[in-house]
Image (cartoon, rainbow over all chains, first blue to last red; front, side):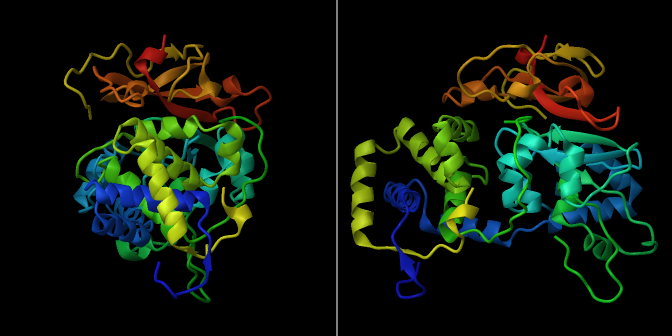
Length: 207
Length: 109
Length: 99
C-alpha cells in the first residue's frame, strides 16, 4: 500500500481488521512484517509446477511412479520440494477410473504443490455438488467421461491431501519430463480436466 | 455442505488482493506450518469459521471469513484482548485508506 | 505417518466394512453430515493423528486417533444417483466415528 499509488477507497470492515490484527501482532512480537511479506511472496509465486513435475516424472519413471502412489509426500521431497506437514495421497487415473478431488468442509488443498486454490474450488456449488453429482459437474467443466469409466471422488475432509496422477496422453513417446509437465495443468491435478496435447498451430497456456 | 443442492459452478479466476494474501500469510505463520512458533491450530481456524452465523458465511468473502476467524482465535487464545482490537481498529480507521480492490463485490465469495 | 506420543493399534483393517455413527454433537467435527449413518469399506489406514475435535478447543487432541480412508458406493449414498455402478466416494473418518 504505497501512498499515492493507485486509487483509494475506504477500508472494508475486514480489511480494517486485517491491518489491525497485523499491527497488533507485530507490536507484540508475534510476527514480523518481513515474515508476512515473505509468506505472501511465496504464495504469489507458487503455481502447479511442482505437482506437474511429479506427474511428468511418474510418466517417464515407473519406479518413481510406484513410490509416488505409495507415499506422495516422500515422493515430493525426493524431487527437492519442501512440503512441511503435508500428508499427500496421489490417486492414479486409469482407463477404468477417473479421480477428482473436493473438500466439502472447507477447501483443503495441497497448496504447497499446486499454489492457492481457484475461487471455484472453494465455492458452495463445487463443494456441495461434486460429491453428489460428479459427472454433471465434470461435464460443466467440459470433461465428458465414458459411461463405463468409474468416477472416484475424494473428499479431503481430514488430514490427508490429494493430487490426481492423470493418464499420459498418447502421442508423447520420447518426450522428456519437462515437456510432459507443460501439459499438466492445475485442473488436471484436481481432476476436473485431463492433459491435452498442445495444438500444433500455436502454444496454448492451459489452466 | 456436501450433497446439498446448489447452482452451476462459476469458474471465476482472479488475482488475489494484497490484503487477502496477508491474511493467508498470517494463517501460515500463526499455525506454524512453515516452521516458527505455533500459536494456534488450523482446527481452531476452521471451528471459528464454522461458528459464523450462516447468513454471514454466505455473504462474506473467503478471506473475510478467515480474518474474522484468525482474530477471534487470537482473542480466545489471549494473544490480544477485545479492547486492544477495538482501539487499534479505531486508530487505523482514522488514519488512512486502502488501495482500491481489484475484484467486484459479487465475485467475492 | 503418525503424530502424538501414544500410537494406538487400529481397530479396523483394509477391507473391513464400517458404519459411520449417526450422531450430531456440537463443536468442530470433521465427519461430514452427508456420510453419517452410511456403511463403507476401509480402503486405507492413514495413520493416527491428534483428534481435531479437541485441537479445535485448544486441547492437545492426544492420544492420537487412528484415521481411515473409507470407500462408499455413490448409489448407496444418494437416492436416484445417476452414474456408473462403480462410482465411489472416499473420505477420511476417525476411528471414534466408526462402528
